Image 1 (cartoon, rainbow over the protein chains, first blue to last red):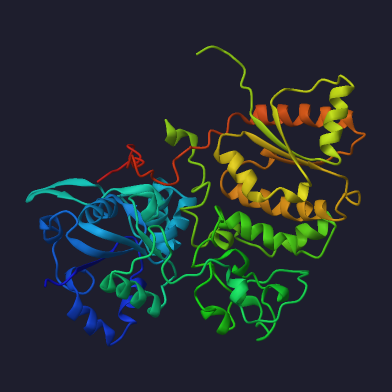
Image 2 (spheres, rainbow over the protein chains, first blue to last red):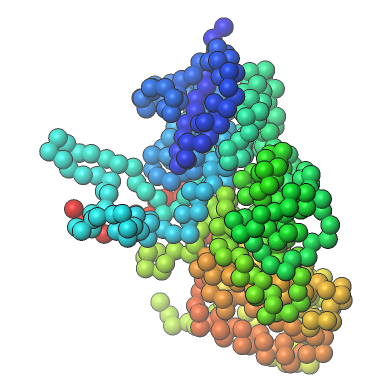
Length: 324
Length: 162
């Protein structure tokens, strides 16, 4: 019997998901025994042609991490979609756009301006920007095109399953691999290794009535270990975030950041989170409310930390001149 | 293109106890107000989830007006207080998305204030008219199984010098 084929790919990601795969520790040897790894550029030497040579639907499982930022990412998302039986959005970036998705608050032009001109460590007196095609004496060279808008994997191709988390828990990864080995796959569109409740419902902290007189970002206050973080005024994404992480951050006395994405049935995580947060402010006076809300310094970064690219509005409005 | 005046689309979320009744009052008293407002009756202004407002803008609204009972008059005791707390945060968030503050309005209109309702709608419509169309890019959030179209990258590149 031939071994099932496994592929792993990274698009716009930090590499943490690749390490999360290795978190399964010695079981990685079992993976190597059971699966035939056909593509994993982070770990083994493969060339793009190796994937192109495969027949359609030849890969049994593809774990795809990272958001879609450039034309190369999009090309690979489509290529791996064609070649894979089961395509899994692995990690917060592939599921929701993740941290790279926060760049949707800017566009290509302003990002280039910042990165290649304004950053203090940049010396670029001729204002050179990277170009997609360039004629060198040796021939034409290409780099992938940089898009204005970051997309999640599901906004680019059809995706069978989602494994959320930044990064996903080790046991979730193993569960997904096991499900493919045993052929016990859940209905298409399921979230593997995640719950359908909110983080709050699984949170072990003591919860009383929530009334907040001020918001603190996590570096401004050392929280009490037992009490609900939100009740202490610490901005915690628990009320809007999907469960399944077993409270990893909360156990470490840190607030939830929302990496598991919106809870089941929530279309826009930022709106729900914002609504939950504002409703518990302990004031009926407009001026006092405004003062308390000054504690929320970066609304997009706070409410859409991992899900801006897959939110309802998706990005900051593009400036008019660019639309022409 | 003809010089037709821009007519904004405005979505109004009115609480059934005060503001919707106030709008009714404006109607029965034959008061005039611009037809740009599309009224959605909700049980309480506190029922207006920020998602509704984002969805309205996403689907082409140029402005959103929320109206509820005066503070202290809420049929559900403090539902409108929740709106009062959420509204400034929502405005702050939408500003970061590039949506002007003036496009989101919050007004307290009682059942007896038909005239106030008519004036508020007139004023709000003229403000939004001045701001011009929002033109939120309507992009499909998820790809439908039948057609796998993908939004194209911007064809215009930034100015490049080598």
